[in-house]
Length: 296
Image 1 (cartoon, rainbow, N blue to C red):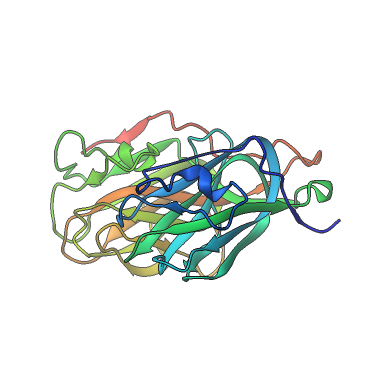
Image 2: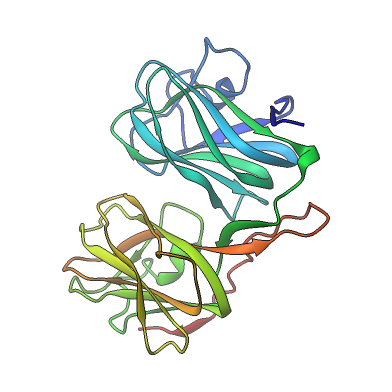
């Protein structure tokens, strides 16, 4: 059976805010003459959908209105509305177009469209989720995993409220902010055991200084190997650091290589997971217990 659009009856939509009367439900009401319109042009805003139960999805399809848009966004899924994983690639939302974000089939109840680069408002006439429940899930998926421990460079954080744990708290109103603005500011993550990592994403904070960052891995938390080239992090920017091929290691580190404060909103590490043979019960990242290896 081919992938088809799911019935949106009973779905509920929420967001970080809407403009005038153009509320979230207008993106799932079946009327292409109405639309959801974001309240502002800030990054990190999103449109979130609760479909009421877990469904298998391999595509998010968007009818982009012919006004505003000209922005980039990512599709994310969550089993609980708290822990989120990116699905598919960062995608450009052009005015007056039908945009499809495709990915390996995944099972989840909560879905959202999150802005990553923007100069104008996001305006969506209709949002649909497509999938083939009969086909089940693929043998493996790539999904985000939370470490059992997190460490920062010895200088510590900038002030109370800017602690390193904030990069995993799933809100966009708190960040990790390095104390110093010199090169070599870092966060290190202990995954508990050797884990195959495909890529790592960073969402910068509102006071990010435009420095660059590299991704490194280690087997012993002492000897580090460069895995991804430098990425420029500007204010509120979303970047992906991808090794040349997936790398298996227990310890991972993000380290700045130019002068400037590190101010990071969110960090996600993406591993390869094996789906249960039953085709259900998708594995997602586990809650972060907050156990630190060392604090500066």
